[in-house]
Structures are given as structure tokens and as C-alpha cells.
Image 1 (spheres, rainbow, N blue to C red):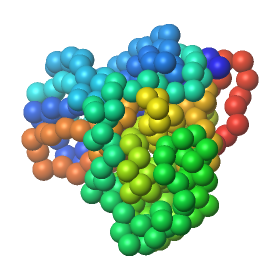
Image 2: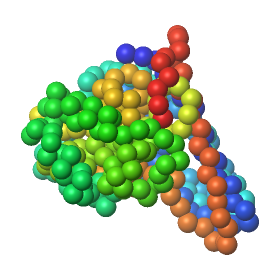
Image 3: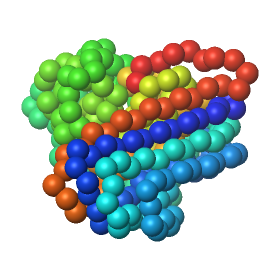
Length: 268
């Protein structure tokens, strides 16, 4: 169990003025059986209206709009969290969680991934079997920033043999779902400095247990969860629409520190 302080900063720069900007932010951590959020402050600018809510998966949302012209949009989020309270999160019910057994466009398995999956003689999401899949995926890929994009599929990443945390998670999801095992994508923050991180939760006997295939570890107290869904599309940090002919550049920075001492630096 750890006490972690976190600072999440997102800034979008537009190369021309825009207006009528409606946005949805999915970067608010919530308390659950594995983590307890002690303090939370956030700042969003510019904004004319701001409200909070939940999406269909139960993730916290900030929704708002800015009517006037602007060329930048940013949000700052900071707080403290106690992590590692338990080994997993109770599921609602198997019937409600069955949707996480099915592949999505980003997590579909092609022939190569199906062959890889078939070579893993695993039938359930039991901890030892989920860990074996995690290790196999970790060994099959090389961490290489810039090798993929947000639209790269699990099959494409596996074919290249390289990617980043989003890709590791998608490949692990593809294998699990190919075997009919419910599994979901998780977006969050990791102890250290970098950007947002991604991992996987596997359902077994009513409990969602988290695994980090990028670092090949079972998630315990070094991660802070922001959201979960079927794949990265369900966990997009910022989604919106505006009026104006402008391209945009997004920068995200995350700093998570332990209150008493620095933790091990892991891969983002």
C-alpha cells in the first residue's frame, strides 16, 4: 500500500482560433476497492460551462463548453491516492461483463495472433494463466515509442513486434478475448514521470485483476486508475468538437510521486 501524489496536465494548442468548443474529459480517478482518492483538485480553461457525470462503464467525466474564440485548451488535475488496498475489483455480474469477452476493431485477432494464442494452452483467466499470457505478450513485443499510432490495431502491432503501453494492452486483450476470457482496457497513471499509461484487467471468479504487460507485473500499488473500457477508444482522455479550421497539437504530462520515497521507474 502506498500514498501517491499525482499531477496530470493536458494542453491542446490550435494553430488558428476556434470557438463553440464542446469537450468531454475522462481523466478523473475514482475510489474503488483498489484505490482511495483522498484529495482532488482540477482546473479547466477556457470554459463557460462545466459539469460532471459518468459514462456507460462508470468512469468519471467532466463535460463542458467554451463559446468564445481561443487557441489553447488545458486542464490540470492534482491530488493524492492510497493505492494497493486490494488485489482486484469486484465485478457487477457476469452477464453485465460479458461484453468484455468480444473483440473490438482495435483488439481483433488475425491469423498470426490466433496462432500465437493457440500456442498458449490456457482456458481461464485464473491468476497463473493470466500471468502466463502477460509474460508471453511482454516477450513477443519490444517497447518502442513512435512505432505505432493511436489507431494501430493489436494485429498490426503484433505483426511489427513493437509498440507502446496501449499496444501491449491491446495485444493482451486480443489473446484473452480469442480464448473467450473477459478482459478490459485500463487507462491510468504510473509512479514516476511520463505520460498516461495503459494496462489490462482480467475477470476471474467475479474479480477484475489488473496486469501490466508493458512492465510484466501484476498491478499493485504503483498505478492509479483513471478509466476502463473495451479498448483505448473507450478511455480517450479528451474528446470534443469545435468550430474553426484548425489543426491541434496535444501534450500530456504526468507526475506521480510516493510521499516518503521514490519508486522504481517503469515503462510508460
